Image 1 (cartoon, protein in one colour):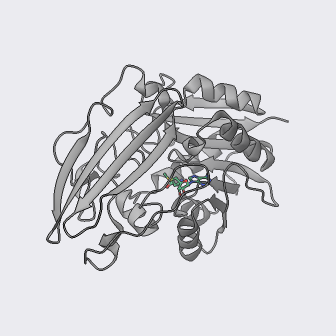
Image 2 (cartoon, rainbow, N blue to C red):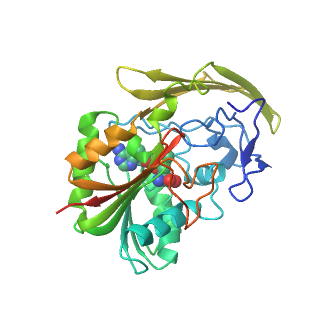
Amino acid sequence: MSGGRTLHRRSAATGAAVWSPLTIGLNLTRRNTPETHNAPFTITLLGGRPVTPPSTARAGGADTANLLTDNPELYERQFPDPEHRAARFVADLVERFGDGPRVYDILDVGCGTGRDLGRLVALGHRGTGVDISAAMVDHARRHWPAARFHQSDMRSFALDHTFDVLICLDSALLYCHDNADLLAFLARCRRHLVPGGLLIAEMRNGAFFLGNTELLDATTTRDITWRGVRYTSHTRLWIDHAAQLLRRRRSWQWEGGAAPLEQHSAWRLLFPQELRHYLSSSGFEVLALFDEPGPRTDTPWCFEAELSSRLSGDRLHVVARRLG
Ligand SMILES: C[S@@+](CC[C@H](N)C(=O)[O-])C[C@H]1O[C@@H](n2cnc3c(N)ncnc32)[C@H](O)[C@@H]1O
């Protein structure tokens, strides 16, 4: 766990701590990822006056209520990717495991703000995105008109098109909480890929939690004053062993606010061998399974990178090919 009050995020470029005036939470992790960061408030986008945060939406069966998902600009402020590392990661892997450099038709499932897809389109590829959040899809459509976006659930989307590549980044896949969700999602992936098409996913690594409790040890309380208002957050992460989920509860209180705002999220804890099994039983051949490097790892992603199959790191990356 990173120590002390964290009003910083890491620069993707340098890894150095960067002051982030919108970040009024704490960083429980070595790295700032959606699973573990503290969600800042929507109020910061509304002119700086403390107002009641809007209610957050529930995303299908997945408990993804999240102020960031409902506020895409804030999401991008919280998780900047100025060097387009996630898009480069995809573009490089596609070239490496696909047919080399050419234009690929790419589907991004759980596409969020559309920023990765937008960048991939700017690199010359064709892009389509799917996300369950109306706010995200609306934002993506407005910001990336060269790509197409659909509001749909990753477990049931049905597009009238097949793609060369399907991507699912930043733990979006882990909103498939149970085995049936995972199988439904993988069936959708297979259905939307051409034979030989690539599935590329990037997520938290369940195996990281084997013997590693640094993220789970305590409820963390922080006070922060922003524009004259003090906000207090209490955040706790724990493992729901029976459901095999990483769960997060966070409550916020602030001066002048009403009752505390409490939010819950959960991510499937998926282990590497489990992922391999689900992929092979769903008609995919695993081409690469690695923990480093990736777009969100300490070792920065680069084209020629050697892929580590140690699989003890906190991120899990997979490249699989549709068989048949
Ligand atoms: C952590 S964000 C990642 C966004 C994007 N892939 C990125 O890397 O920036 C997870 C996204 O998954 C979406 N999501 C959650 N559950 C979903 C579901 N059942 N179907 C489709 N999208 C879902 C959320 O709305 C959110 O935009």
